[in-house]
Amino acid sequence: MPRYKLTQKWKNDKEQQRRWELPPGSHVWCYLRHSPGDNQTIDSQKSGMLQWCEQNGWIVDRMFIDEAVEGSREDREQFQEMMSLSRQDVRLVDGIAVWSFSRFARDQLDSQFYKAELRKRGYVIVSKIDDVPSGEMAPIYEAFIDWKNQRFLEDLSADVKRGLNFTVEQGYWPGGVAPRGYRTEKEVFGRKRNGEARYGLRLVKDESLAERVALAWQMKLRDNASYEQIHQATRIYSNHQHYSTFFSNLMYAGVFVYHGKRYPADWESGHFFCEPYVSLDDFMRVQVNRQQREFTTTSPRVLASHFLLSGLVTCGHCLQGGQKVTVTARVDKRRPDTSWYVCGVKLRQRGQDCTLPRVPCWLLEEAIVDSLISHALTPEYVMREVTEAQRQLDERRPHLDAEIAHAEQEAAEQEAAVRQLLKLIQKQGLSPVLEDEYERANKQHAHRVAQINALRNEAKQMQPLISSDADVQRYVRDIRSVLLTGETHARQELLRRFVRGITLYADHAELEYTFRLPTLVPLGGFGGVDSPTQSAPTAARTPVYGFGGHRSVH
Image (cartoon, rainbow, N blue to C red; front, side, top):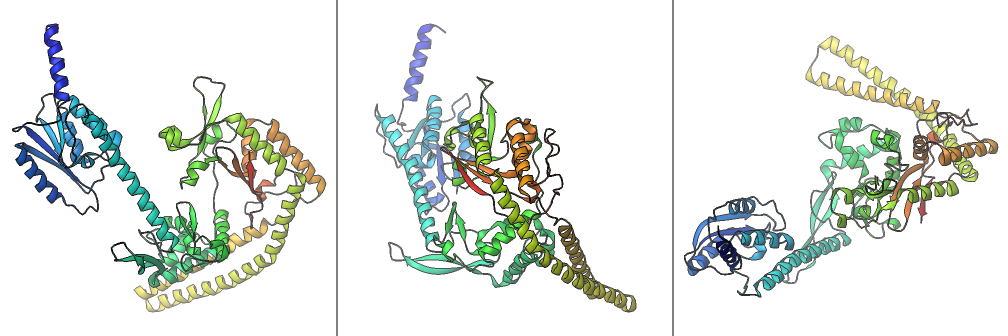
């Protein structure tokens, strides 16, 4: 094609792209969208759009309708089908008519992107509601409309969150499914602007589940029963996998955690959001019991990592937003000798989704090790922890003996009941009622036997810990030696004995450390360093802890 004709074609395409009006007789597609909960219906939009197109003399070839779909989403089925058809080489219609640009898209970037793509292909986009004058100022007017539409969505989101927070502050449930064991009751707690009553949902105990929920907490608190045993006894959920969330929910202690904040505001003074099933002290004891049943494992990727804090650091910025995200170490591609700890959100998503800056690995690792050595791995601190742990073991031992004797007596009674049922079955034959009674009695007996074995194992592990000052001094010296000069894998394993987790913020890090009985064992296997406290046994179960604590590292 001659250069003159190419130039004319380019000018004609540009003129086509700059069109803001459609002449009568043009063929159009109509795009309609309805948000969830809108008072306006699709039928009213459809009727109004057909009348408007008829008034302007446009011919409607097809309507694309997305019902009950948010405008901030890109994955709208009919919208994407319209965009796909518009990408064909032959332009099927002259333009696209929308009820308003807010129906087209709420996101400012999405709206401008898709409208620019359509106009580059020669389509004219017209809006029934938005008054956009033709001419050079049209793109500016339209940009302001797109900004206004997105701003409306952001303001609406902020208003909804503010309203929900206000509702929770007044002691009402924000909505959704109530936790098992609770139900909601409607209450009037004010008036709307139009004078109508404003209702709130008050959480109350569900009488149909209250007895079983209380039994579940009693079993976990008294016997540290397994989830499967609790499930068999209560049947609160469809399977035992849901009980982990159940026993982690502070709501059962009367405290509601909403967007990272606890309600009511004066919960520490003994006030409750709803009627609790357990006290806060009992709730914390249950968490300790759950830890005794946990099998802590370290990921193979973490074990193979040559970074000291792999798997221990979480992002404080994301945690404040209610999301627990691991901070991982990454080597700088431009400088292989430099590495950084970076939030996982920044690695997997957009950088602006998390404001936590990256931290040099050497800086964070040195700060954590120095803090641990200076404040936790001191002879005075270790001796205090050992003394406290020994005191708790001494207090636990008499109660443990009594629990074993009581459990053995109950096991004998249950065994006698099972034998009696067997004799009755042999005499009268097996019936559905006798079968159910036998299965129930057999499960109770098996549960009690398992409890006795667990208590006996715990009693075997209650051996004296290291106690002399000289042993403690040598023990701390060996630990410090491995932590400062040992190989990376040895330092990692040792660090995990003392550090439960690290929360990293922009200006400091929160170090949570704790001493457990398995920590106070010989150091054999750590880079060939032998501990002088070789008589200290390995304790696999831990009584009550919480003596470590938090430390802020700047």
